[in-house]
Length: 114
Length: 113
Image 1 (cartoon, rainbow over the protein chains, first blue to last red):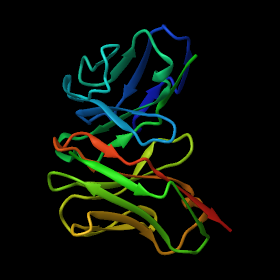
Image 2 (cartoon, rainbow over the protein chains, first blue to last red):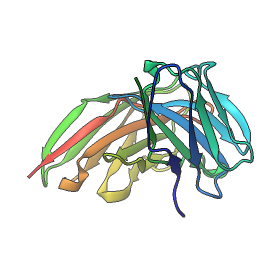
Image 3 (cartoon, rainbow over the protein chains, first blue to last red):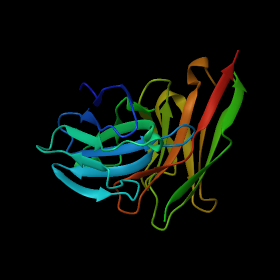
């Protein structure tokens, strides 16, 4: 069990650029979640996948955000035309379908938009 | 709708003292409740969870929490604080769809010697 991994750990970009983050869940986990955490706040849910299907999206996930999990394994989160308000820690978590309430979190990708 | 309120953004205790971190929840469905800990530069780690079984839940590192429906509370306690307990702690409630977790704003625990 190698845990949930995320890449990159840190990303600095200029406003208007596109960025993509990757999450590798624990290998047998079929559920994968994305959360966003801003300074001084708790994580906020963005979206979740069961296998390759994206089953829920929060209102925080604007049209500039897109997430994929093409083969039901790793997932990517892309932000187009980044804005300064996108600066945050992006967290990925995974769980088993039959034990969804035990979510294992990765270390996160910290994004800074200048 | 579901929500969580953590009372006190910062709690300071002495090593060996009781730790009490407060969490109140609101939920339109029977709640699942969680406490997570986050150390600097690390991901969130599940301390314990309540999923409608025993109301007193024991977790890792000596922490426990009690679900009190009448008070809509799920406070986290540890009898004796250790320096290594210094971290940020988050209370969370499950969303109605039993997928997303809804987190509070967190409480930073400081432990002094």
